Image (tube, rainbow, N blue to C red):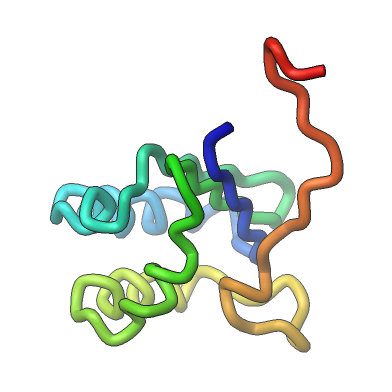
Length: 109
């Protein structure tokens, strides 16, 4: 099974284009491939932002390890003005990870 992580934040729906543009530019840099990211999907729903990462294995330690990389800090800086923590007690993206509690995939029992 592939690795998936879903991060949750607050975001005004009107800011979706700016957030998407920041990630689109970032994704063209080759940075996601360096991490082993296979897909990124951004969602918005009534003030909530959800960021789904998909990879072959857990990439979150690698993401955390690159927090000083200019490519990472630049996209983080750009989206920070549009995204706020869902829970102020857990401000980091790693703390904003939703915990899966049910998964269905074809062939799983």
